[in-house]
Length: 98
Image (cartoon, rainbow, N blue to C red; front, side, top):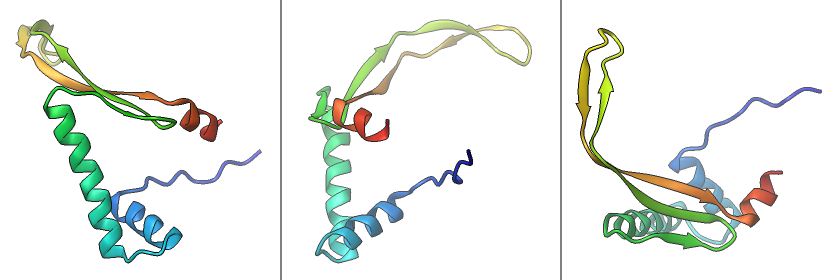
C-alpha cells in the first residue's frame, strides 16, 4: 500500500479551493476567508469559545506561570503565564477524515 505525498495547504490554497468550488472570485474568496479567520481570532481574544457544528470547537485555556528548566544548561527558570488556543474536532470532521 502506497501513500500519497502529504501536502500542506496554506491560505492561498484555501482561497483557490473556495473560488474553484463556488461561483466567487479569488478576491471575494480571500475576503470571506479573512473575515471568518478574523472573527474567530476576535472571539477567542475576547475570551469566548467558537463552536462550528460538525467541524469543531476552538477555545482558549489559561496556562498559569510555572517552573521549568533550560534544556541547554539545566538551570531553573520561570515560564510566564499565557493563553493557549485548543481545538476539539467535531463529529463531522472526524468522520470525514476516517
